Image (tube, rainbow, N blue to C red; front, side, top):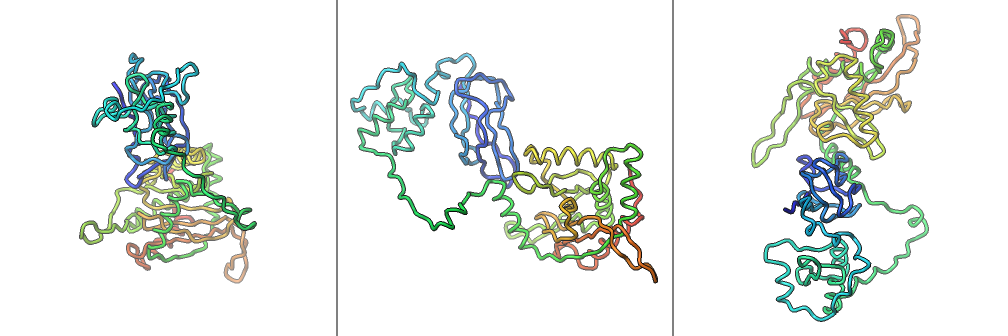
Length: 409
């Protein structure tokens, strides 16, 4: 039995993927769930695994190929079917292979080797040669086992048809400054970021800014660590406080949904609060999601944050770990940024941007005090969150951080 392992559906918005790595070779024996191909989508790196035990009959893609959902990646044969998993599938012809006949092949013979509606048997090297020489595999008579098309078959067909490799494109001499700068195609991740940020610009957004006295926040962080709690960071405290604010102001956990098929737009209210945390990785910006943050304790949030950030840096986040956020926290405090404005993540209504905590001079009555201060900048989707509602939510968050939060350890 032959099984085609195809590019799976990997999220509603994912339509294609790029082959990042190939873990197996033609002729290799694999077991169910063994990784075969590593695919890069605009969301994550994901392994496509073997659906059953078998022998790799052919690898139908190369590293760097961009394939659509449903495209064949690998073909598997039964473990005991040695004929179907023959060495002809290897990307080079056997050294001892006899030269193929150069005699013309009747069309009837080619048709016999490729039954109507059946799969064309061809080694990967033959498929690549056919693409390069402009040869239709369906018109080639295969001389390999069970009618498999070999490299020599393709070359012979190309000679009979007068096909020639595509003429190389003329060399274009670019100006020195452009040649020095170079041009690099976007990765799937960069394309996704570009698409989502462009979509974000279409959201009517407004921004509210407030400086927060971080005295209680820093004291709570130190207190948690002194108790031996998991390495709680300021971000963990912010995540819990943001989730609490969203519970008290449900508009922050609501999203604007465009209407489909003539239906009017609607507002989607989510159950619970899942807080996304914008995280930098070598591949670009990703937003892993901490589920049910309004119910988690600080130690639990800290553990989950550390796990997700490590997975983000390694490019190993799953689609589920990056989908369905309610509200997002974006912090550039580690970069020494005082304040900044973040763009609302499409599908959400609010994003919280946080700068570094720094000592600042603050008037206290007729005196001046030095106070640890951080700046909150909240961006809102004005279709969902009215200005007064956003202002009340920001004031509430500031109050929680300045001593009004009953922290859950």
